[in-house]
Amino acid sequence: MVAVIRLQGAIANAGRGLDDPGLAPVIEKAFAKGKPKAVALQINSPGGSPVQSSLIAARIKRLSEEKGIPVFAFVEDVAASGGYWLACAADEIFIDDTSMLGSIGVISAGFGLNDLIDRYGVERRVHTSGTSKSMLDPFRAEKPEDVARLKGWLDDIHQVFIAHVKKCRGDRLADDPALFSGEVWIGQKAIDQGLADGIGHLVPVMKERFGDKVRFRRYGQKKGLLARFGAQIIAGAEGHLADRAAFSRFGL
Image 1 (spheres, rainbow, N blue to C red):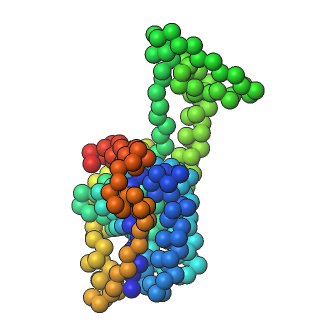
Image 2: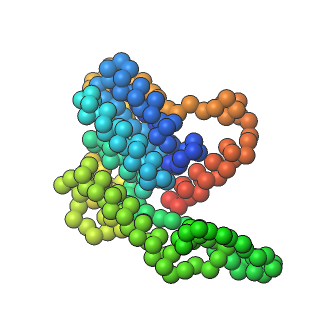
Image 3: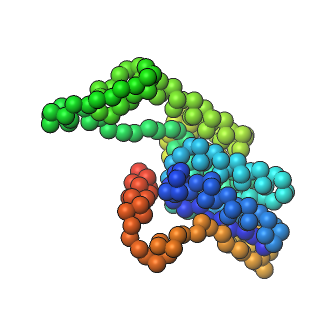
């Protein structure tokens, strides 16, 4: 038996997407129930929270090592940024000819609204007890020292991401300066870069490894009662829009 865990969507905290609290019982059950020969990850994610990506990947790696169960990742449309962080938790990564992989970088985006509130005569009032407490306030003009501090944080997280990929992929990675630039590769080009191990889909690859009679047991995050009955609520709509915005960067 092969346990199949579906990892679909953006990675975010507070239950708005893939996160460690929501996936923990799913992952734990997949490794424990029925003594699986392997765990297969079906990944389709444009990324998101680096912390949640790290926590989910670490849980998968730990259980794989503790129980001696190999992990295979099967990328669908995209495994980019945090999505690729998750894929690296697998011993081997398989992709489609058109799958998009990479985007090994870190991004922070926002808006500057200081000119807008000035135009409408709105006065921004902020009182703090710390000199850095109001840094990067979108209602005030950007300060160079705040931007420099933010870039330092992004660089720190980027280095952790790079170390994770290097540790998991090892000498399979190509010696290419663009590999950790945030660039994305498709299909065979991703394999050439060492980001994946081959072209292949879940069922045929698992049958080739474990025989034609191998069974599959599928696991995924359960939707709430309202979502299961198709109720449209504001939180769900916001989550859907955020998910689509994340995927749209890859033309999906």
